[in-house]
Length: 171
Image (cartoon, rainbow, N blue to C red; front, top):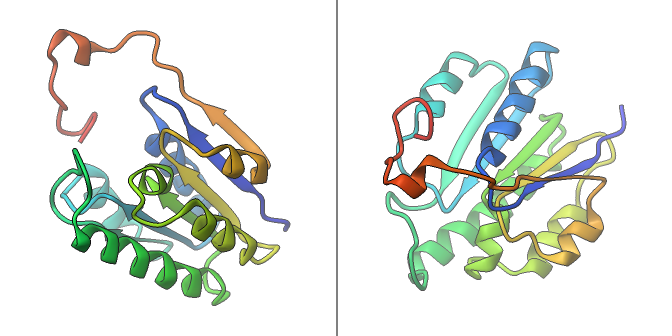
């Protein structure tokens, strides 16, 4: 089976959820999935769900337990760069059918690793591996590399009315 590059981007909600839904479908078909979450190091409800599917889905976070709001710290940069290198080795190992780089677009925006680093990663993708990259601010060069692009557009969001992230829905 030929693998493609999918990108889920935009300011709307649902980029990670779409990638996780794809992982769920792939696991149901017996495929092996590796999910790398950049920028994230906190506990999210999806981590609990994925533990149940650990025979087919592995998730590792390459971030600290806080959200980057301004300039990243050296530790953020180190974790992301080491993570990208580790995931490249994992992707080329032949053990996984799908690799998801969750929040990789925003990692390039915060310069945790460069767009060139991410493009080099894309070029290492074996022909039979499906690669999914998520988050807002996808660089035009990543868009040019992609085979499928979905842009999530925020039309209306209850965050605008002060609703905080709800456990099981947004966190």
